[in-house]
Length: 483
Image (cartoon, rainbow, N blue to C red; front, side):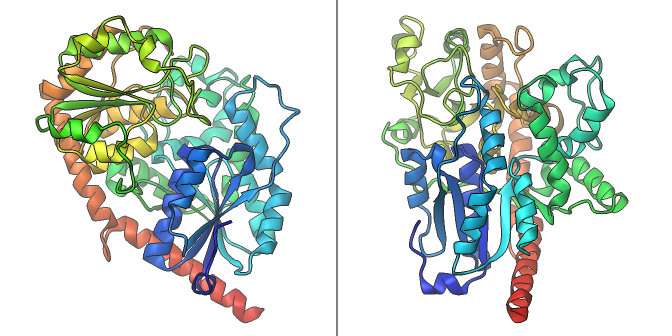
């Protein structure tokens, strides 16, 4: 646990529990920093020792130690789970089994909690917060369309006898773009998925929250927001939704060990397509070959972050940095030599925020994780959507068909490979075509809207979080007065 000074103990204290995985830890940590720097809280992040990693340790160490600390919960046995269980099964089991450890952590704090915040998988922990008299909130690190699906999933499960991916017609939820069943998040598509029942249970517990904090902003999905507000008024006990984003990292602490930024400095403005599939994503061997040949055929400048392929799991790098082999060995023969004048390939990692902020970057070939989507949006960079796992297919539909900031090339079959021809055409269109120009304009509009939303004192997201923070502080003061 990081040291916490006397000044931090005097501040109202928020306890946050992210689901394991850097894609979950980073958004909740960024939220903790926002609470500390803008609203005067101290914050404690609770992490799971089962999935401690050097990357996570380095990230947590980088947080402001005077206001944000971290506690690693003791190891939780998962030995009874089948060894080949999907990641979602492990996540659900951890969060269901952590309650005794979570209680011990709460009781150990010298500065009692003014609020408790879990993320989208942690709703079963809200009962403990209520028992301890602490307001419990859900931080939802995705979009309103995904939240609408989460809120409606238990009812959808009750009213459908077939798997969602087998429904003949797209599903249209209130205010949302129509979504085919094959584009639903992985665990939701089949009732036989090992984590399906757990997710139904988790989503049914969302009503236990005192509120839901969403990492998005009003102009991103106005029709969905309108529908959510109407449902809040119509349904008693529905937790209020607060849009408090976009929360993205500044990039100022990112090291450029691979020389990406120096290479970008030598490229023309808006000329480079950044290709990266997140901290947890892996391509299959065939898809990696098609991606390379498609990028080459497009003739566009590109900066590509590559990992060793995985033919079993698209989220193979979720908890680790992946295979230690040289990923360039899996590229087509001669590819690096043929593209050396227009492309740069870097292994495993690049300073993504800094790359997206660079003037030379004109497009982002992305897995559509929500963190990456927001980072791209706030820097005005349109996208090519290549979803891999989790809710990324749903995000791709949203970005391409509703928000209007992405092109989604067609796969050869559902869940199949996107061919080199589609990749080349999408890259050319985004970087040079008329549709690409329209996407650039739309992304720049949302870039400005995102900036306005965060601007004090009148920005919509700033006001929303300020109101929640004030409520937490007032509640903490009342509990202290009664003690």
